[in-house]
Image (cartoon, rainbow, N blue to C red; front, side):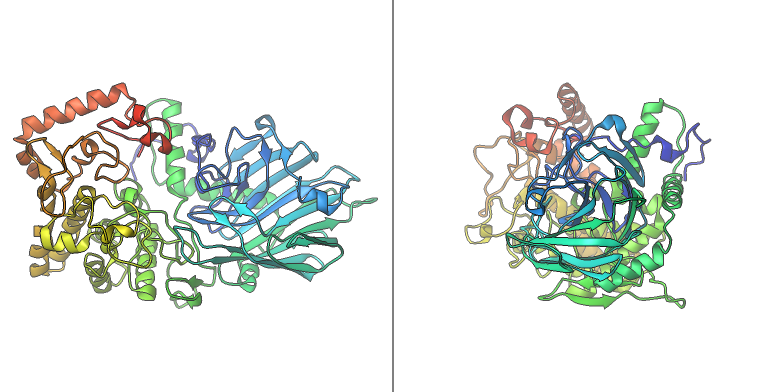
Length: 614
């Protein structure tokens, strides 16, 4: 913690949740959730695709309130409506306009008004349970639409199921079909408990309408749940939705453990306090109010993406093999899980940013992440670099979990099996490990170029014709620099464990970046399989041997040996002069390649020497 005096506002009050929500993606925006929560409940204004979906500020319609906004995963959209139309018409047209003028968004809480139905909606959550509060117009129909099929963000849904299990409860599951990134389907289970009794259920599935049912099962399925709205029936409806990757029973158990009451206001207050406690780990003063808002908003975002996937009892679903298997995390003497199991977007970019934050400000989280990564190794044989729903995704390139685990050890976070971790990381840095796989290379081990790296000390660009058939991001010199840095961190780990031979071996590999430096051009440059340089060569050509970057940007990726890079360039003065010139040029371009990830490939944005946007 930085011991500075407190600001006038509590950190939680300085968070601006709408920041960057205009150009968002499925798992970016958050409102009704807890730090790293399994449940991430919020309105969806966009449904199609991972990049243009979720809560998008400039979209004018709410299309449902879904409970999982995670890396390659979504689940269980529910929408309160008030309509006298037939279910066949409702399911085709139920979206509602809303206005930001009547909206309140805070960490752990979201409130808005559905203009079409005149319904006030409030949302909050615990770690694994979404909590809804709907205020319907008095005397008008009170209904909730539960969507089990279709598409939400990164996922298209397969078989879904929901059934009545009591007068006030419905349980079931949705199936996230496999994606290019997540190769196995993933089920997400739910248990929905209502404060008022259910009066009627209608359903649809496979294009057929089914009135007066107790459930449904099939493709493109859903339910319309109705409640009594006549006479003195209350206009307020409360709903608790437990979520689990394991079973309906565990979804219910998560409710029993985390939310056994119906006090909505208490959960809102508890969530605010929870967020404030996490954000207060770092205190800042000085600057403007806007700068402090930006800091705590960014810190709030840093406490979201690595979603929990284990239940309150420590059970989780292992999807690293050919079939899904329910397993149990280790428990302490009181039956409490020793750590949470997590999803994760790529550690590829995070190794330079938020992965350095967690062990400093949130050591328990860093410990959980480390033990979670080792659990994947024990289950599937490899430490991942971005798992999703218990699946390996092989997102991006390299062994980007290595710097994170080594950093934790160096900072004294050692409540994990150190020898197991070291053995697992060594495997990741071999031809049998994750370094051998390019992005999303699920079933082969060629796109990572590891054989070339081990034999030649660099990865060619392009790879040979047969090797380049599989995987994304096959960018030889960029991968070479990345592997060299990660080898450096593994060498440091070996030295700390007094493994002298390994230290010597990996430290030598960490110098491989020199093999792709071209002294004539002054840049890291693509090298062919036969050892010749790429000709012609343009250092500002986007993705010319570098992942989501150009050679001019990638040349600086030698963080572990700046003196060595300076020597290659002709001395420190030359390095400093070149770096200064790169920043001066990039300053004119706003230090980014446009305003969105997609802009980087456009000619007018791609020729920049520094890109903070990626």
